[in-house]
Amino acid sequence: MNKKLKLAIIGLGYVGLPLTLEFAKKKSVIGFDINKQRIKELNNGFDKNLEFSKKDLKSSTKLKFTSNKKDLKLANCFIVCVPTPVDKNKNPDLKALFAASKTVGSIIKRGDLVIFESTVYPGCTEDECVPIIEKFSNLKLNKDFFCGYSPERINPGDKVHTISKVKKITSGSTPEIADLVDNLYNKIISVGTHRATSIKVAEAAKIIENTQRDLNIAFINELYIIFNKLNIDTKAVLDAAESKWNFLSFKPGLVGGHCIGVDPYYLTHKSKSINYKPKVILAGRKINDKMGNHVAQELITKMKKKNIKIKGSKILIMGLTFKENCADIRNSGVQGVIKKLKKYNCNLDLYDPWVDMHDIKKIYNKFPLSRLRKKNYDSILIAVGHKKFKNLGLKFISGLCKKKHVIFDLKYLFYNG
Image 1 (tube, rainbow, N blue to C red):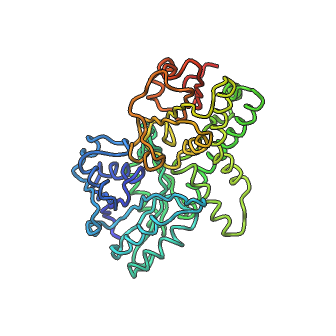
Image 2: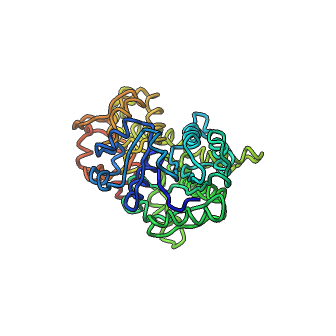
Image 3: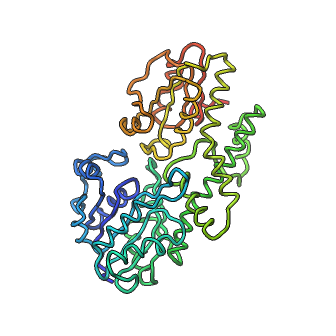
């Protein structure tokens, strides 16, 4: 194995781009994506995801963005960072991962290294991806080429826990390669790494990180539903419970994104393949997947209590991303709320200063608002806790409403008991 690694990052989304920029501070890096428009934008200093500025994208002379597969031949270490979503039936959708494996297999050389960062179920790297690389390269793992796995821990919109400040799990297909992968990431991770004992252990560790969060949020969401039926203030209950040192702090809400709302299905898929049907994990998923329906119903209930006519009412949805302060709309829980509200024949306006207008049009068949009108709404749902919404202030948001109205502050931005 050539110890002088020449890097190519495959996939320049929320995971691949920050990794590329961080490595480019230390060494030459090829950033590859099949989306030619994405490459054009990055070369012009524009990140559609709004995670990085033009200065960030132009700060290194050691970086090359490309959609030309021939450029990958200059590398001997390929880091795969493509998305791994679920399909409409909640089964793993590995098309992008398999396509990336095929691409690597078509250009890999003897002695090269492939590292996967995409989230998968335990065994996927060695049982699914490696055979594809072997097929298209006519090379054999641990004889002609080597493999590693270092799961991504990217948190979109988080400017505190950036890539270099989050401990990284590493692993390799041989002990020597595990050392090499670990040393590579230690060059950019200031807080260090955790070397897993195998690739399967690294895959499993990643998958349970978000499954654990999913279950904790599901528990709080179920409490929220119960306490609403009992007319008890959930926020007040959580504030009281959090006064104990070992109470885990989670808030109710919509669960989405590329990790928490997806990863548990990868684990349950693998579990079912060995004839074990998980109960707790799927129960948590069921609660969180239906939270959009509950939020919509709760809003309608609040409107009825104020004698606001539901049919034809004007409702503003504030926030369309899966979490606060980022442009990521993947698997946003808000989508379930909107789908449910449409069944009540309400007139919905959408607003989110973070999102790409054309991406929203593709999903909802309407553009989000670029300007808000005063005294226009019967109700407003603050669905995402963007700092920009907090900065608007409750007085401004109230001014968007008619005299008789409901403001459903799902994220407790303006909570005052």
